[in-house]
Amino acid sequence: MHKIIPFQSIDSTNSYLKENFKSLAEGNVCFSLHQTGGKGRRGRVWQDEGKDLLFSILFLEGLNEKFALALPLLSGAAVAQTLVGLGFDPKIKWPNDVLLNDKKCCGILVEGVSETSIDAIISGIGINLNEDSFPEDIAYKATSLHIQSGLTYDPEEVLSLFLKEFDELYEDYKRGGKRYLTLIRERFSLLGKEVYLNYHNENLSGTVEGIDDEGSLLLNDGKMVHHLISGEVSLEKTYKR
Image (cartoon, rainbow, N blue to C red; front, side, top):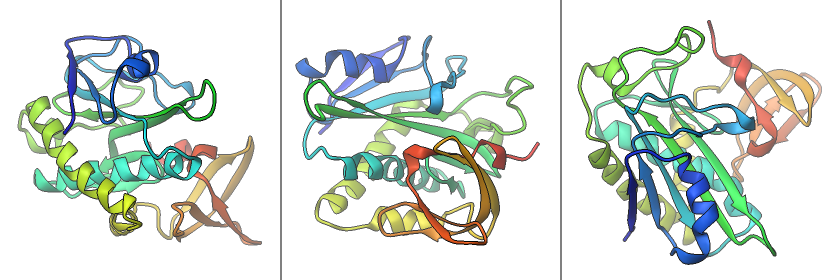
């Protein structure tokens, strides 16, 4: 059971959980319709007009690096399953984007809190629900559920659907299962594609051969197959203008 902490507007749902985790409980969810200081991976700004579903989930138990690396994929798989339930055919652009018709409709940012060891891990998720347009500089790569379907979505209902899907995948993960990886592979958007990425500040390119059993991207650069960890890779250049 998740306790929902709702806001009409907040600087960042991730920041709220990071700042207050000591007084909160496992599975608490900070939810808002608008963020004034939201961000994506690598310090990018999250843009919204109050029409998104923005929320973060707090984890205080079973924390380790393995879980931190799995959490973006667990979250993405749960988002994809949620969208399937709403009648969409989503794809997953490893490690943290969910796509509709090759455009991003969801971003995921996992952050840790470390005062002594790993004290908390937070999964922040933004789903574009009801926008009818995007700024010119991101319109080539962004979409919303409303743009794709013409329908209007209730954020709280979509959040409830997501939490159900996520909890099922998370319980399977805690039992040693990897259903989330099966779902990622079924909806993997990069298989067989040539991609350009930044890895430890080094530009690499190659053909994506899949995802290994730890959730790492398999990239063949023509000389060797790299196993790339999600937190160390940027795939920004793979979006087409």
